Length: 326
Image 1 (cartoon, one colour):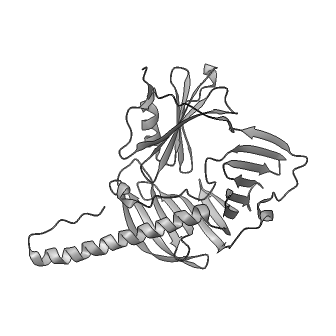
Image 2 (cartoon, helix red, strand yellow):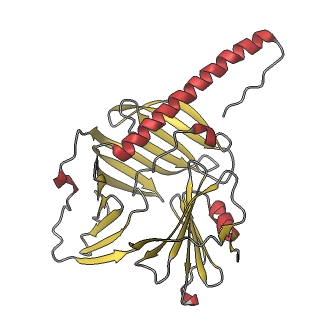
Image 3 (cartoon, helix red, strand yellow):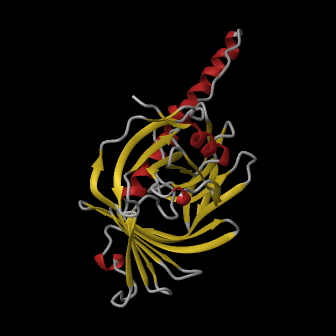
């Protein structure tokens, strides 16, 4: 959090105390705004069109999002480029590719265009981000507040959010690197809240009778007991282990251990699975937009680290994974 060095002179001390109170009030206001945004992103009923810019590409997507006692439902339709639809029903994604007449069912792991929810407790971010309200804007006909998360080191990206004042909807999101260069941008061009979302809006836009259906990376038989011998020796500053799970997946003959690391804002996933054929092990670094991945082999196990963090961060984590025999 912002710190204030108190001078000896009493008059200046009183002035700075007033400034400190003002800063605290701003932080409290931002915390309430981000809390409202989290609630709307996950549990709001809304629809709109947004532009997604990354890797020198521009995509336009249509989104419908709904929430009920049965959970979250969402539908994304591409309006530019190859026709495709993604329909989310809680934790299951149905991906439709009309050109190839293909349907792929998989487990939901990303938000496919909209950033995931952000923490409402800002204290945990204070040592690694500078959080400020930098102004007001108008996006898609709605007034919004611009909030900036400035990274204080090279291990994480920065973020700038434009959050609608009335409902807390995230109308624009920018991700930038440590040099301040924008590397990904999402912005709504039209948006509206709804009281409820009709069932028909979540149905596929095309008939799927003659499509080929495939299943990829869907969880089988629930969770298994994690192997606690897998550890990470050196974590980037501020990152800690949030969860560890181990599952059987349809895309792998062996269980996949999934470790999630977070600094309170950015998240990194570590996947570990045994490989039967050593020639099938992937190695090296890969980048797609803001997502960096690093893979290596360890005793015939595939170690894969993926996250919306700089390349150096995923490499640091990936090279630190080891197996500690009990």
